[in-house]
Length: 324
Image (cartoon, rainbow, N blue to C red; front, side):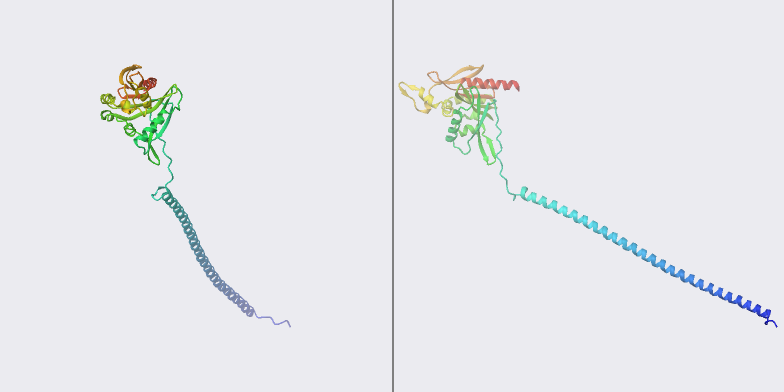
């Protein structure tokens, strides 16, 4: 007998059971898969959220670092600028304290060169310091300067009297001050009409020093009247400074005795003409010329001891007037 054959219903039941098991297995697998997906999604979401949080935190930290770095850079720049500002302020303060402030040490000041005015062009110039001198010492200093021949024949040496007002300043002595300092008592009418421009010097006439003085005036009538009034004492006043006192004493005689008194120089003023200019010349009785003067123009009078010197000065003045 064949093996017991299974009943068809049993076969169906077994199939049904198999199908149910498959369904259950499928359902379980499907259920597990959904839960896994949800879990996975949640895990992924948590991871994503954590990543976002970490990313945002990283951004914040990066921004904070950048802000700190930027703030630090500005601080460094401000520190550099402030340091530079302090250096400038310090340098300015040092400059003021050591050079400009009243407490700054004063550097020695070199004497300023004296400006030397000239009425006629001189071939050479020499300054003569009369600072602090009395009339006697000043007169002697001027006489010595005018008697010294240091210029060539036919040339003019200008003597420039100066006085020091301070250690760093020298001034040319004015005409009125010069006349006072060397005791040349010009009449008031002439004294008040004098300008500041004047000139003192010598002309070398064949090895002989011919002293001269040029004065300028601002009112011809008063200046002319003053020179005429000065004729009474002018020969005596200029005798020492112009160096003809000894010559006058030697040549003046009364009978057989020599006249030695300074104020008894004998002679008289006479009219003359040199280079078409009127001249007043003081001449001794024996014909020796001691001193002469001439108004070269209405504003310029020349006093000298030598006709050639006067002619030279007239020529120079006319040339300068023509050039102007």
